Image (tube, rainbow, N blue to C red; front, side, top):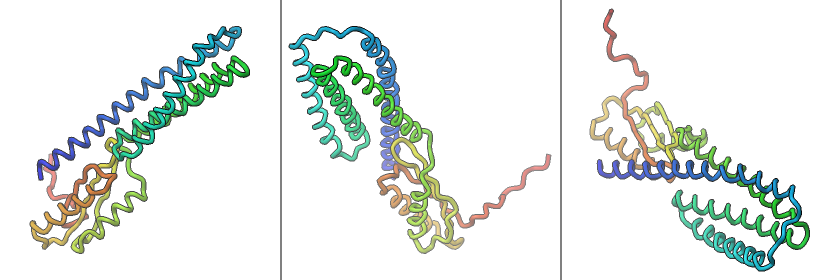
Length: 238
């Protein structure tokens, strides 16, 4: 049992580290689109640039090939439930969107107006800033231990209450983010005459049931015989 607990904690730590890595990566990613529009605005103020037809063909071919490969990788990575692999799927899909915008504006610039190409670069930069800002904020909320929504807490409460007929009262149900999933804390009240072995079995099976939920990394169950929590010791008079 101790080995299983250590394995669960290690897995939770790995997911937390991956979340932190993703957060740092997204912060680095945001720097490029913030600087990039300055160069494209400068290009818009210049005269029409000279274009090499051969280079344009190579550029279009490479961008089209990369977009197709990224789209295939997006579909492949979305087949997995692992949070890290799904993050790769999100990154690949982001590249599909930006490459498609870049390819479309480049082709339009060749056929119609040259300034559509740098305009497309500005659109990509704005989309990048918006997309990654949203993702960064989502990761921030998951890293700071945000509480679960009320409907999920209600689901946990229902599961705890129906776990065993000896449970007479639910003192506390908490769930807060820890990386990708939740840590859950539950305080239950059993009759005072419940034997130690039975109380242990009820608490342990409830812990196992909670940890079987996909959204839960670790569950902690505290068993008590009362819920008033009256002070058990008097403080010494000074």
